[in-house]
Image (cartoon, rainbow, N blue to C red; front, side):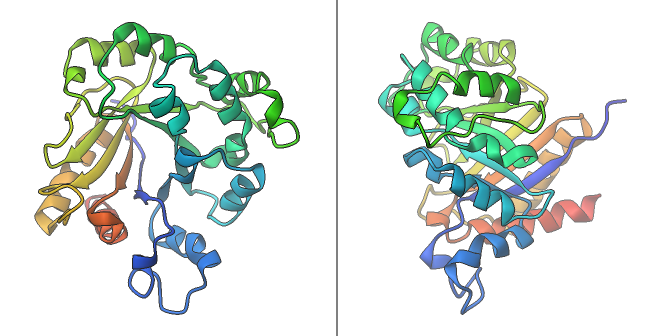
Length: 277
């Protein structure tokens, strides 16, 4: 019998004005918001890294502001996924891994590669990209050493231990509804993101590695009324339980209703899962 998997639940980001006075207690200073959020959820999908490379000092601060067992998943740069569109990305990959992500140490969860809606499934292009991804922190350090000169003085090129580095790919074009897509991910030990987007994007419910990654954008209307009712939370809890019982780990993140509901739904799901264990 396989060992039961582990689960972390949270939301995409944590710095949103709409959360203040609601999810965040009134009067809580902004610099303490991550510290507070980390007492309510078990993980956060860090998304500032999607827009620009972050500095080592920032990664160090996020690591030190959270409990020892907290986990960050990291949204990879759009420069790689949306601008370069996975093509000719060796140096950008090196720069990303040199930017300080490895400073998270054991708090580094999964790296999320979110592809743009206009990017179609091109097996050769995707495979060339996947074969470049490091799957251990030691491999990531070696890749980071090949950073560009502009990173000089702003890099972080070490790891305190050789740990696995996990990757998940989220797709948004219908051409990825191909049996060849999960086969390719499985070959490179990468997860397919299970996205709940009210039918807006493909639903890829495939086991391709030893963990599952779910992004819950909306159950009924994307970014408009992404409210998860108690029955929806129950349904997701049952789905996640089945993953855990099969020995898979699970990373689950809410990114719904312009993010207003995300932390509330995350806390509800954590409570629901706790009642089942």
